[in-house]
Figure 1: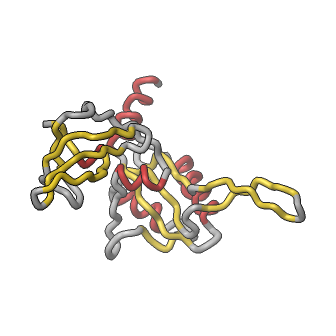
Figure 2: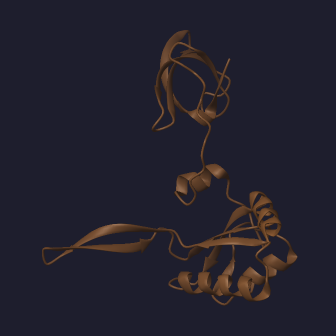
Figure 3: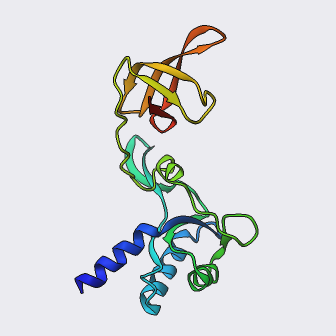
Length: 183
C-alpha cells in the first residue's frame, strides 16, 4: 500500500493546476461531482485535487458582526491534474462545466507564480542568497539585463531594492526575488 502511495505522490509532482469554467453558482456542485467521479471510476492517478478558492470576510448587519465566506473566483474551479484524453474528457463532460480556460479546447496550466499570486497553493520558494552590497543581475521584468548592487532586502514581501545605472545615474529600483540572480 505504501508503494502505491509513493507512486501517486510521484505522479502528483508532475500534475499542474488547470482552471475550469462552470455555470455561476455551481462551483461546489462541480467540485463534488468531479471528486465523486474520480473516486468511483478510480482516476486518483490523474486528478489529485479540486478546489473552489474562498475567503472569509466580516459582515456587519444591524451592529452584529458575522464572519462569512465568499468565492474568490465565481464561476471557476481549480483542478490539479495530469491532462490526458481520459481525464480531460471526464472533467469536460462533468455536469455544470462549460470548459477549460485556454484557447479553443486546449487547457493551459497555471504557472507556479500565478498559483502563488492567487493564493491557491503555498509554494515554498527558495530564499535569495544575497546580502546588502552584493551585485545582482536582473533576469526578467522591466529592468531585464540591468546589473546593480543590493540596497535593501524585504524577505517578507520577497522584494529587493537595488541601485542600477539608468542613463548614467544610479537609480533605486524594486524587483521580485524571482527576477534577480546573484553575480
